[in-house]
Amino acid sequence: MAKVKREIIGLKCEVCNKRNYTSYKSKNMKEKMEKKKYCGYCHKHTLHKETKIK
Image 1 (spheres, rainbow, N blue to C red):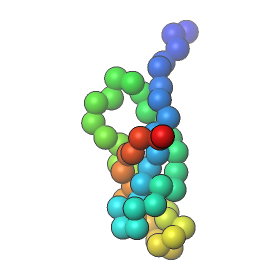
Image 2 (cartoon, one colour; image 1 turned 60 degrees about the vertical axis):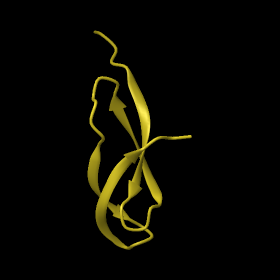
Image 3 (cartoon, rainbow, N blue to C red; image 1 turned 60 degrees about the horizontal axis):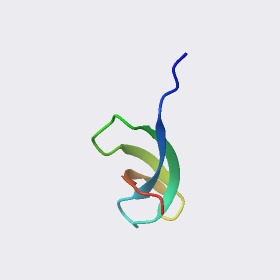
Image 4 (tube, rainbow, N blue to C red; image 1 turned 180 degrees about the horizontal axis):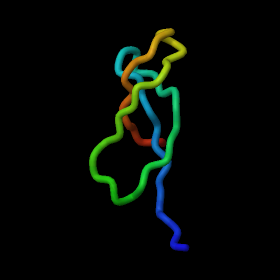
């Protein structure tokens, strides 16, 4: 079984710009990940986009 190289990314809310979640992403995916997740600061489901973890 081959191991897949993955990197840790942060997911940032598009409304309040808070980084709420972390996720894994495959190294060979070129486009930025987008997910609709619950934001605890906005108290609603919003679009979260990928950011780098520092």
